[in-house]
Length: 196
Image 1 (tube, rainbow, N blue to C red):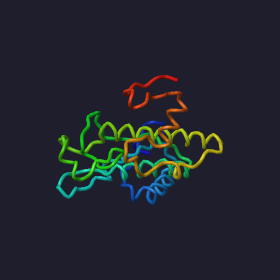
Image 2 (cartoon, rainbow, N blue to C red; image 1 turned 60 degrees about the horizontal axis):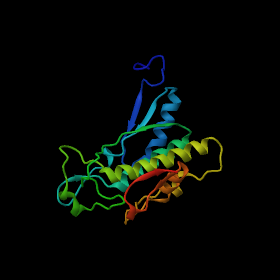
Image 3 (cartoon, rainbow, N blue to C red; image 1 turned 90 degrees about the horizontal axis):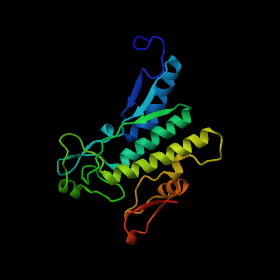
């Protein structure tokens, strides 16, 4: 009430950074408490900072699976509580760094020192960022569809916790590309993307 006495939308943002293991337990209580207060807030998740670990080699890293699990939980809990997920904070780069472990191209603890360039916190690399973007887009699409009363599946069964080991797209990624009418040339023909 002190920060937003007129309860104006967009004035207060709550950024959750709970870690993947806590999101499903703690976020519902927080959403209910805010709802009961009558305050209008924007909900954002930061799945990066709550999932930072120390690798055996001593470098800070973040497991892609934990980041993804926290994002999934954020969407699922908001869907269950009837609230709106307003945004996601990510730390990423377009470079092919090896700072966060996991993802479809499987960066391992042993790979971290290969291209660990961050001056502060570990970032998702280009491949991990795109993989996560496809999964978030699919989750958002299904969440909107579910809210509009369609017979869509819930988020949990379709969003994978692990990426493909051989660099293939997940079914969510394939579905999204097909829905948007995008066809990619066969890998032997190069990497061009064509509108369908």
